[in-house]
Image (cartoon, rainbow, N blue to C red; front, side, top):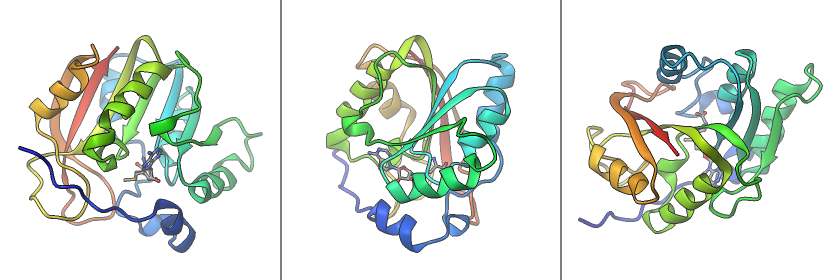
Length: 205
Ligand SMILES: C[S@@+](CC[C@H](N)C(=O)[O-])C[C@H]1O[C@@H](n2cnc3c(N)ncnc32)[C@H](O)[C@@H]1O
């Protein structure tokens, strides 16, 4: 079945006009599903990309856990705001970078880990192969992609992020030779009530 194309806000206009704390995805703490996986897999060190960082909350929490962190987003205002907020007293230790993952300027084989909490699920179906191609390029061999996206279990509406089944995730990432390590049904923590139903996926290159 083909997916209907969904409309998303212009990200730059959104970050210019709205405080990040009121955005549906705003979550101060480290994503609990990521925390669970990092603890389970005993991952404590390495180079993380927080892809589509938006408010930057996940980047700062990963940095506090001891990771080297680059945080990218296509919206210059989101990157500016996150950088001012979190790098003020930290000698710019987190690299906040404006970058569109569909046409990324990040270096090849740079990252041990990528966290995508909400970027993949706003990429239109026709651009997904560009996304997976770029993720494949920038992730080191043996690296892990931690992915949080809306689940098919979340009621279908014409608005909001694309929804994914386990099969859709498998097809998308196995197509480029990635291996699905685990997929779990969970929720997307943020400011919505109830919290949207989501998938948390661990994928290895
Ligand atoms: C749902 S928000 C999630 C923000 C953040 N990951 C979080 O958990 O708070 C999606 C983010 O992806 C960014 N984004 C959308 N398309 C992108 C692209 N092609 N490349 C990089 N970032 C993108 C948006 O600007 C937005 O900040």
